[in-house]
Length: 415
Image (cartoon, rainbow, N blue to C red; front, side):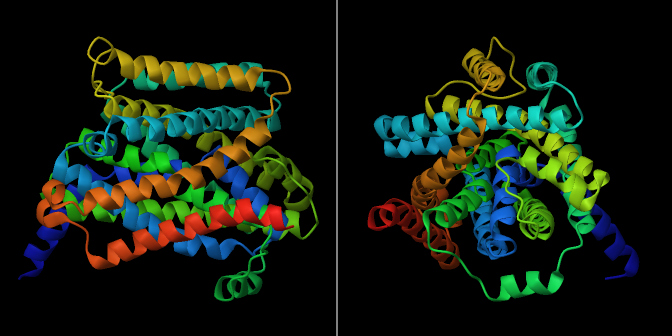
């Protein structure tokens, strides 16, 4: 093959990848939402670099699971919720999705709490910032199209890299970080276990599996596009874990060393000011603001997608309100509910944030079991069923999560 042909082939492949780019990166980036940032910040502030190692297995499992979602969506042309309803029955579907709906209302509330907290760092009242952002988010989805929304989401994804700057300004101890990764440690108590479940639950959130599969379908990808979709997934998962890593590093290298206790991501941003400088504090707050807007758009959207799919209603950004009324009513209702909760004086937002991440971690095994059973069903997937390695990683994740959940329940009884 001549140099000219190689260059032409490379440019062609790059063009196809850029056209397909989106679902993997967007789904991965939304993972670093206000709830995730809060969880990573608290983990770094409480335990320093000690829990950073949890991001490595989370990264591997995240790639494997997202690849399964993309493959199922491309091969079947159906969303995960659709497939669960068709194969598990309406009763099982109902209980799974009630749990997911409650968790995602909590998640959405957390995102608007992130908007409020980040803007308070810049002295903007939540009674101004939250309603304004809610209206912007609603218009983007209800009045926009999938192509426009996707381009805006990709810009938001890149903006999350501001956390790298914030972490580097804290002058982290790279030798200690290397040691924490090579020699994993963990305190076996309720607080540590619940944080690990929270880290896993926010890195590999249950709602992601539904949104990823739906967005692949919405984008109209075919099996010939699958290899490019996998690259998109790997890039997205890498970005997710890199951002999570630097958030933990930023808080570990400043807050933990100085024994600063925090309850939410806003506390981390404010605490960084005297320790790492005003710019570091503002960069951290800006990252929280962008992540919160991003996720406040995607989470209600994902919820509306999977609930409508589960119960056979029309769903999709490119459909009109008349074509998919249930989809838009649910989307609007979740946003309104999240805003109302955040604007209630003295609402327990910190508890809502942390418990939502723990609920995600508890729901994840149920969703993973459903996924693994579906993707190994030859009637559904044909020749595209899972390979042994994918099954091993998937089932291992289920076993570990169930074990951690059981430990969270059992340890307090014995102590």
